[in-house]
Image 1 (cartoon, rainbow, N blue to C red):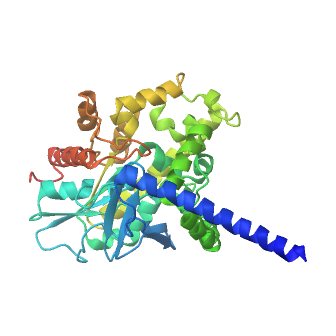
Image 2: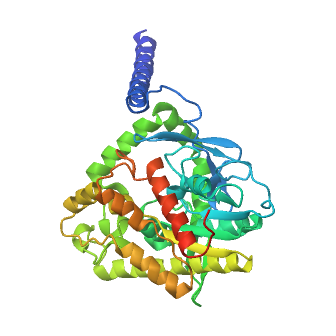
Length: 407
């Protein structure tokens, strides 16, 4: 007679435990939201705003307001009917208006800043709307390979006169080339480039297709996790986990990478990769990356437009305090913050591509004590102030090189 009662008690105890843990986690989430952002709930900010895409892996969800929320910031990005951040645009620019496409990843998309505050919007404000139209074709977490597909499938059909590639020196090489991606992070959600044997590249969708199948099967698991554990709590747990175990930042030879290192140091790795292994991974990754960028150049020129590019200035370069913290963590690592700029300038000369620069503008302000160029806490993206400095530098360089007329 006691067995049913005992069973019911156990079920009740399990339910009580689940409810208690869930409530505790959401109390933590609410506390984090109030502490960092002063709000408890905003449906827009809880909308991640990306969807699966058959050729690019992921894409901005058309006609949506994308929420961007981390410990460091909370912001909203409007996505138009074409999946582009910003207002609606016509298929072709107005007569007498030069359309400029800015093609990049989260750094130029404007992760963490609101509409009107990203590089493209601030370039538009500087150039004015009478003669120029700046379209932000950037997407958060995109590689150059995804940018190539996005540009050639849809971007060039918008009839630009100028295409500007924003290049993230280490991150783009890591995510363009699958062998390097696999040792960087277990997120093989993209199409990848591989050498075609003739100095060019070919696209490989195998890893992307497999990732999409896993995501379709695991969508309920993700939904359940998001229900029980809020985004800021997940972010905080991720930060703690990364600080204790390294996460994707476990090996600086990979997450910092060749563009910022004068030499690899296997001492900081897990013992599975030698200096020669690092050299080959990064060398092959850079070769295929250059092939992808040359492909973007060729397609752009064939469409009757000019192609230019710039290297993004990351937080190690533009925040001396952050650089000092990285150097303190890896005291024997031979870091070189000017190397990405020189590497890209050399490639530009080799490929006949104009190279724009924001490096001097940002680093000179940082040297004067400006520490508001990048977000703090759990993020390394530029603030609205950083985007403004970058936009001014890019417009100045476009005018100086005769690519655009002085506004």
